[in-house]
Every structure is written in structure tokens, then in C-alpha cells.
Length: 307
Ligand SMILES: Nc1ncnc2c1ncn2[C@@H]1O[C@H](COP(=O)(O)OP(=O)(O)OP(=O)(O)O)[C@@H](O)[C@H]1O
Image 1 (tube, rainbow, N blue to C red):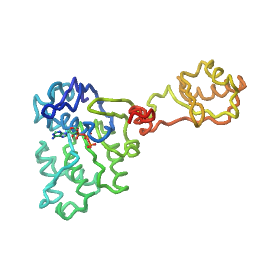
Image 2 (image 1 turned 90 degrees about the vertical axis):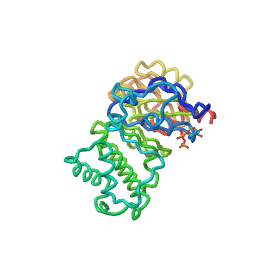
Image 3 (image 1 turned 45 degrees about the vertical axis):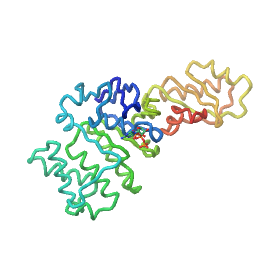
Image 4 (image 1 turned 60 degrees about the horizontal axis):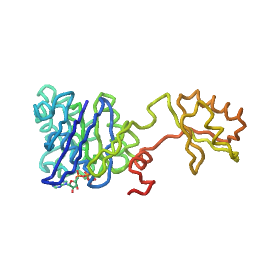
């Protein structure tokens, strides 16, 4: 688990992170999003132990990351948004160097490097020099360098930039695979539809402050939102809906009435019965899947014109 306590960060006199308190649970993938200059990269650098906060602490499994940096770095993989690769080295040499630097033993080296090129679809490039790779292939080598030692925590700053659509999809599958292996992952991106494919949580930062940190995709099997459409809802329709016990919350929107149910799927059957019994002319009912984009806009109050 990554735990951040009361973290503040300044560049000279300018404060860019304000009292960050945060916990990333083991096996979660968190999408880090926010406007340009919000502080995402700075937060990641602090979490990677590369920048020292002005105050506050980053804990990896309960231990301050800067207490024993070598041990911390062995558990961490961090890919910055801009990274350089040694153009004269081969893919094999890059990955071997990265693995050695993070403490992979000679006995494990071959399996670690081969496993990584397989995962990243770079097997046929293993003896190619970096200078002969495309931008997307270099990006993949960069990702390979930070997962070759099988870290517990992975921090990726805009990892999909430069990747083609197929490679982006493969990156999604790779992240899901790493998550299934128990890795805790934080990924920043401006492409929200992509984060939607694999993130379990969303962390929104604006002006150096946490704006929202929440689970996505209705992880609660006992709660759901459904969209109801009516054929001419009577004037007292909303009152009638409010009187139904199954319903927790009601919101009237352009596309119909959104209701939050405090129970699982069986509640939809019961709700239909109630609607018919109360003479409410329902003609459509569908579960609502909240996208990351909607959650993000809600958290930044975009719809209320604050941006
Ligand atoms: N080395 C630096 N020295 C001084 N100020 C910096 C430095 N790096 C970043 N900043 C400032 O800190 C703030 C946060 O920058 P940061 O790069 O963390 O934002 P970001 O959310 O990652 O932005 P983007 O989405 O554009 O990558 C910005 O206002 C930026 O101008």
C-alpha cells in the first residue's frame, strides 16, 4: 500500500502541492488526472522518492520511502513523462542494465528480461539498438525498464504517449495483467477513455490539491444507478417516485430520471413492479455506467462552469 501523509511541496517559494493525504490500496489502478500544471508529475516524483517534499511523508507498506531509498527503489517502478534511452544500447542491454540497477540477481536475469520483452511485444527487437526503434517501440522499452524487476508499485507518467491504438490497447491489457499479479499502479493520462478501460480508481488534482479520489464503475454490488424513461410522467410523478423505499436518490436529467438504488440487481425487478403498481408509465429502464469522464467533470464542476 502507498500512503501519503500531509505532503506539501514547493518549487523555491511557490507551493505546488498542498496537504496531500492519500492511500492507494494494493492491487488498485488509479488514474491520475487534472489540468496542465495541476501538479501530477510533481506528485509522482515525490512518490518515486526523487523529489523531497517540503513537509509530509510517502510510505511504502508503512515505511517512509526516503528512510532506505535503495530498498524502496527495488519495490518501485517509475516512468517519467520525458525519459531518455541510451541510443547506442540494444533492447537487451537496456533491460539488463535496468534490472541490475534494481537488484535483479544474475540467476533471475534471463527470465526477467525475456518475460519483459514478451509482455511488451518486443521479442523480435531484443538485439536491435534503441536508435533503430520507432517512438512507440522506445516508449515500450521505457515501460519495460520500470517493470523488469517486478516492482510492487508502479508509477507511470503519460505512458501511452507515442503508442499506436493497438499498442495502447496492449498497454491496457498489460496493466490489467500486472494488477492481477497484485501490483499497485498509478497512471497519469489526459486520455480519459483509455484510463476508463483499466482504472479501478480516479484521483483528480487541480491547483495542487486533491479534488476527488474515488472508486470507479460502481464497485459496490449493492448499489446501482438506473435511468428511467416515462411516457408522459404525471405532475406528481417525482413525488410518487420519492415514496418508493427502494430508491435512495432521484435526479431529473435531460435523458430521463436517474435513480440510485440501494440494492443489487434484484431491486430492478422490484422497482418495475412498484412503478407499475403506482401507475407510473415507465417505458424504459437501463443501468447507468458512470464513465471516468463524467466523474472527472463532476469533480471539477465543469458542468457548473467553474473551468
Ligand atoms: N522544475 C520546476 N521548477 C519550478 N516550477 C516547476 C517545475 N516543474 C514544474 N513546475 C511548476 O509546478 C506546477 C506543477 O507542475 P507539474 O509538472 O507537476 O504539473 P502536471 O499536472 O504534471 O502538468 P502537465 O499535465 O502539463 O504535465 C506547474 O505550475 C509548473 O509550472
